[in-house]
Length: 137
Image (cartoon, rainbow, N blue to C red):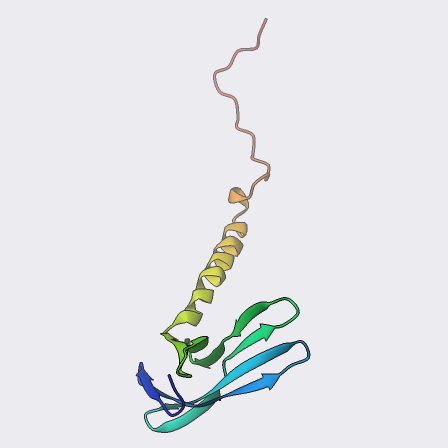
């Protein structure tokens, strides 16, 4: 994408307003600004970045997230092309926050299983009455 380019995903309209360089305490950073709107209504300004750490010689990507309800919009920057265009990964993950429902359900099941004393590990079992057994001689 180049500055001014617009893309659409899952009803969202994303416009790349521009890319600027910024200096941090121990890194150089390329920050992109995306204007995000849904059905013509402006929602947010998302700013993903790509950081280059000069002392370590490594590069990291700082993704931008927009959470709406149980869904998330994710923007990540890639490499820069020779013509100045930047590779951008944009994902819409509907209902991704429902993944937290699984651990909550498992915790509820664990608590439910502890409520029945017969099912607890290590709980003493009542002795059965012996029938028809003869004492040893």
